[in-house]
Image (cartoon, rainbow, N blue to C red):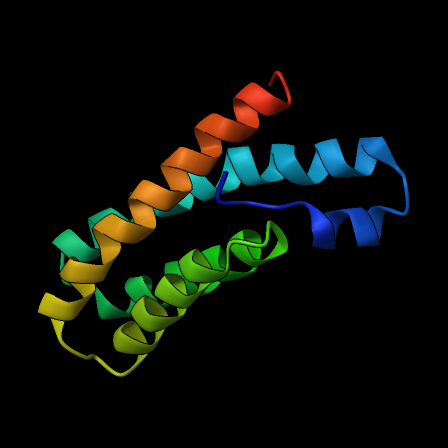
Length: 112
């Protein structure tokens, strides 16, 4: 398991519906943002690379996915500074793999 619910549990203060709501939003938004990010990378669209990596970052952060958050931050920074596309293309598959793994785990763990 590469996610943990510590931050969400702290915010939820025992409210299970809140936890399920946060997880549901993650499952709805992050795969879409990930697809958009992949398209932006394929199109060498630095502005959207920056915007989508920036949008993914807090979503993975709230699930305690520190390494994934770090990858999103690196991609965000490279997108913002029109950095090395080769570096972005090298980092993205790691981000994608982690997000897809967590999506599968969350769907399983929460029966969603």
